[in-house]
Amino acid sequence: MQHGYVANKEDLLKRLRRAEGQVRGIQRMIEEDTYCIDVLTQVSAATKALETVALGLLDDHLNHCVAEAAKEGGQVGEDKMREASAAIARLVRS
Image (tube, rainbow, N blue to C red):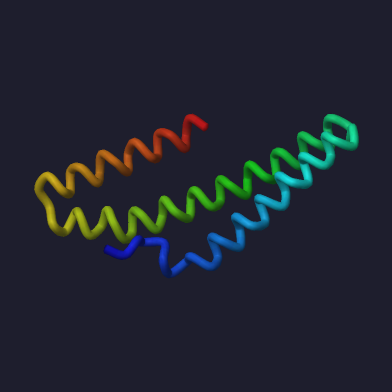
């Protein structure tokens, strides 16, 4: 089975590499005793980058995996809907 994000894989990897660089930059800022507000600004940017990746993955999951399961119907469809709902709840809580 192919995952829904395959079509956007390179974009997702690019965004993750950017977020990884931001996190390394934050670590460097802490090591260099950078002003708190400047560090917090970078933490916010890294968080936003990861949220963008998460929302992209969720969108791909809904449009591919959940849509296919809904077409199949029955228990499979119900399970995928429940799984997607739980994933959305986790994203909202974080």
